[in-house]
Image (tube, rainbow, N blue to C red):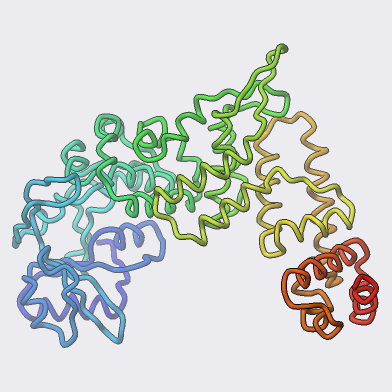
Length: 443
């Protein structure tokens, strides 16, 4: 019998429910992760006990979803969701069951789960309960719906996107019958809230296979949640600098960028405006003039539609705005670029520039990468020398200028920026004495 090392608190919950005469198991993704040798991010418990019976068994509980059978058991300020075995009634909105029927049968509860690899239950007495050949699918690397795929996706359309997300996270393939149901029912994703779509997209993009967005497009998912990507895949780039469609270029870029949320999103969207601005000259060469500005604007629209927070949206737009801004590899140009982009954003913009370049054709690619290497080396040296690249580190302040007799108001900012320009040109000028003398000359 396969043994799983359950956390002490999970074992305690299961034991307490069993002592009260009920069945209880760890269930779902936590069991899957253990079988894969991964550390579960959270632990869920399922039980034959009804919600009120769960509450009676523990001192501190929270009614998180009691109408659907879920009670959160609190142990030393840590919460564990404990849910009564249930059968879901008819779904009315591609998400919520019209009614929930509690059952004493574990397998009936497991039947309603999305994929076979998430339909495991486990306790130390019974071992693994695998009613739907989930272990076989784990071993073969397959994402397969429990039972009839169309029924599972009809119950909750978000499972359609979750199938691709699990495929991306685990490196698994999607079973043919599950794929067919996705293609058939993908339009139902339009009924799912933007927040839930966003959460799944982020998990997919943060996985080891963010280019699985390609599969989301091929299966018709993006047509419902990110149609701009479909247009990108349909747009060729007949240009010496490129070898892929816009969409495939975005997928290649994703594979060359580190797993940081705003960066991955920026890599996905940095050229999303190209289909709108594409022109072809007499020689048959495609051009995309103005694509940076259009892509930045479209990224903002997309992220607001998907209810992303303002900070993420701001960062993504900034990275896109400057991903094509390529300073010459000399110290002055790099200082000016860092000032323009912002010191806190410059390394991320460089990372996007590199990913973008690696996703292009081999035409002049080595020269482009050499330029990136040189700029990054110069930026590192600038930071190591603590050279001034923003007003924050300028050795003169507005109060200093007021002491010189400069009136409060716009003139202070104008003069500080003049002095910063001087320092960006000649970093050794960033001394209080020099800047006060320079300011007095200007005034």
